[in-house]
Image 1 (tube, rainbow, N blue to C red):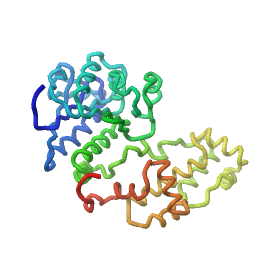
Image 2 (image 1 turned 135 degrees about the horizontal axis):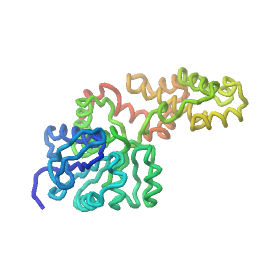
Image 3 (image 1 turned 180 degrees about the vertical axis):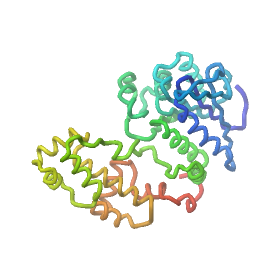
Length: 329
């Protein structure tokens, strides 16, 4: 094994990868390598050191052959169509390198490569929401969570689709070099918010669907426009011109979640924006968004985002980088 004073970050690439799954984390780690006290050295690696073709047609020239990597501290496996049924030689190489790494991570469907290598067995993991059902079906020993941006299970990290690889890489940098460095990197990359792993993969507008029935769709528009109103199920049902029972059934079938859950998600979405944009007291935001009390808003945030409003604001408020304190959490 080669000797190095660096923290060796190796990003595994292969034919059919999604280019951003590799280049997103690469840019984060390369930027972190410039930070004072950083020991990162970042390389890309493919089988035999061969040039790989991304799903977009872009060609990538790796730094090194997987077989010649030597020391590896953080191993990152990109995702893409080529990861769903990976080359057995790629799986074997990842398994061998993972055995020597301090930390192993995957981006998007790179989780399938880790699963084939036996690295997710008995662990909680995530991948792109479109592929979670397949991952759970094919690998029964993996606890698949379709919601988070990324999941850490011991030394193994997995992330959701595409840009979430940037979130994962920023979280790794925060762990290694401190929050100040991670936030500064996020600002440099024009990633305004360093999302926590527990945050949902997509907003309420993406997580739910617009109803086909006009009366239900109109109710969604009413809630979206003014979430602070007292939107009980009975009030929503009257607005739709349906009985409470019929409305609840039709809304759930059309939207994919119950009306109460939808209202909560929209209120959380609005509250998130208020927390990001300014310094208004949490209690005032809670009242304005329809939660009533700060405690009610806190419970909703924990349910939907996995963190309290105060933590969300501390991490995500625009301009928080300039005023952030140094050191890691």
